[in-house]
Amino acid sequence: MKRALLVLFVLALVAWGTPNLISYQGKVEKDGSPYSGEATMEFALYESESSGTAFWSESQNVTVVDGIFNVLLGSVNELPALPTEGCWLEVAIDGDALPRQQITSVPYAEVAQQTCANFQMVHDTAMDYTCPADGVLLIGWCPTTGRWSIKIDDYQTSMNLTQASIISKSVTAGTHHISVGTAWPEDFNPEKDYLWAIFMR
Image 1 (tube, rainbow, N blue to C red):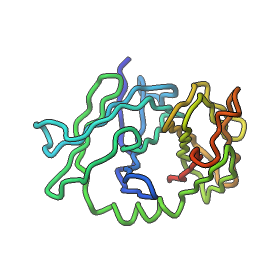
Image 2: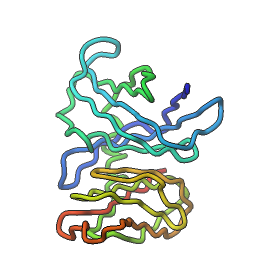
Image 3: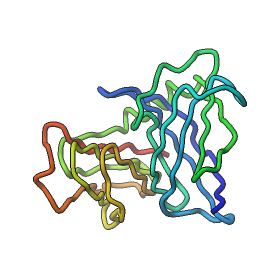
Image 4: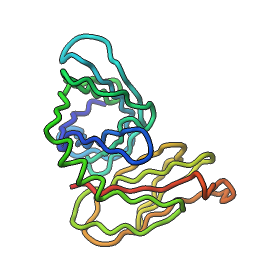
């Protein structure tokens, strides 16, 4: 299935007590219409726009909702320090590689400040998150064990989530209830498991 990726929001460095992450958002279309469903995405960083060997890579199973997806690069494999002389990101969707995009330092500070301000985390299986406007809610669940599902208001994921799982959902302004569930509540570790969310526009 051929899919086209249109980047809507570039990159931002985010850090909070875990290794540095890069928030990445895009839009996936199929036959000219927004795609909804699961997609396997591979991400790789290069020091060259068109050649060379990737100095970092990871693969994620991404949930796309109404064409929009959000991922945190570095949530699977820890990100190294980015080279100051130039860095390009290559994205492949279900094996189809797209042209590399340069990561620039200009938007880092502004977007990182916005993202950190919108970051909320709890060592719990539920929380309420208030979105300041219409946008996209990026939600992550980091359990130590077990298989889980995530629910946002009346929308529930149909996939089983394991460690470092991330989903995205288009949301309206206001408060939304986020929760995770499993058939085995004893799998929850209140000291190590955590639920987090970031609002993106």
